[in-house]
Amino acid sequence: MHIQSNAYVANVNASKYINTNNSAPWLNSTQTNLPPASSETVTISSEARQLAQIEAQGEEKTESTPLPSVPDMPQIEDNIEKYVAFQEARMKYQVVSDMTNIAMGNSEGISAPTAYYLSNNEEARAASVNHLAYQQQINTMQTYVEASNDVDEWA
Image (cartoon, rainbow, N blue to C red):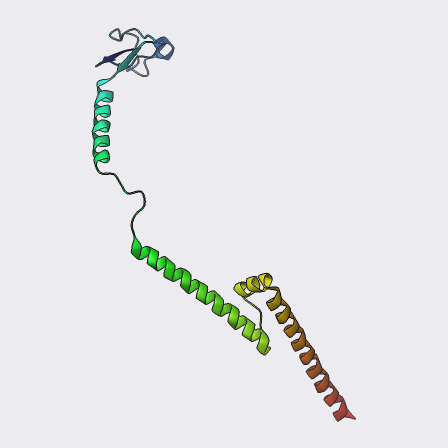
């Protein structure tokens, strides 16, 4: 393959792209200084050669100073580990708090960590369901006693 430099790039079928109404003066059919197009000839403009030289110089600079693939940031890693430990402790506290509220009978619902804990621990789920059923029975009995006291007072 033969490469010619300091020449303009020519289209193979330039006659298809020539504008005949002169709306684009840079495309005229009188350019005769273009070499004939061939499948074995490649022409490179002087601007392209300059860009190639600039890119080659840029590659030499980057090869001499390689960038690290993974940044070394031990402070961030320590903070991430502390944050994960904090979130884990917070979730455990939430589960213990919700389970204590269930056991004391003043539960107004459970949080997402407690629901996850109960869905994966059959013994804890059975204990909490049994305790909630027991609390419901106690509340029903208290309501019955209060209602029967009111009936005794009417009589």
